[in-house]
Image (tube, rainbow over all chains, first blue to last red):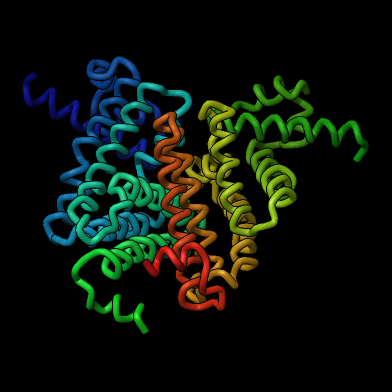
Length: 216
Length: 216
């Protein structure tokens, strides 16, 4: 494919991705996407004969962007796997703040909108969630020496995701961070409680700040 | 208002409530609502000159239905406040199962769809969440003797809601209950951990099964 064509396709996908995230899939028209991408509508139909095909391309792009757009900056800056998880949650908070609550989780939005009506999109949405879960699960794996045995990394990763999605939903509804921060604080207490219990009862590192606090 | 008119209005609101929950607000047309409710379209416009007014009526009805449709059967059957909370979460699981994942949380769905585009609806969606939170918060208040002081009922109620909304989202996306059950299991572990820590360090009930397990 010559580079000009591939640039046009990219522009269409990027524009659709933004508009779907902001307005939803249903309310976004193909003519609006073409106009905002600065391409002819015929060109859009050339690459994407149906809106569903464009949606699939957007969801594939989202998968490809997980590392460079969502994880990499945090993973590069922080080494502690538990810290990475909470910085990731911070990043959603920053996104809500920067967009004045107008952007939520783009995958969560499409999940709610399309799960029933678009089975093909649902599969791709599930793959996006699964990849996100794998990254967070990997963090818990790396921290497994600090966690008790029953704390399965997969289960904990799911809990981080459900907390994030629910917290984003409440922040957007209330237009403030009280519920968001409350949910993250509880999640943190839960994770720290697991680490603490392991420190007390399972691992050789008996004397740290938290263990001493508990022994009072 | 004569009873026949009020019945017509009720039928319209009930039908719109069902259709908004199943298809979303945007994709549901007023003519479809009138047809399914078995009323003339002119009659619908008589009661609701705009779709937004019908949406507001649906969200007011949802608020009124919280007790009879969501809470009452559980509150009547179970006395333990913590058990009430987990039975409430069970009820969402049963709803997902009974509808084969086609119905999510009707308030969560509308929150995602309308939070940005419909500020008036957003207020009413927030009120629905707030009333749900109050009911769960009340449970934690009633269980406060079993909980440590720092476990604020409001914060815990928010965590229950974010967990439920996130878990419903993942169940619908994956079309199975693995993620849903994993999230609820972690929430339960968290809440039981709070109760257990209070049993160990704060309350007079020192010797119960869990306290003994920890002392091993």
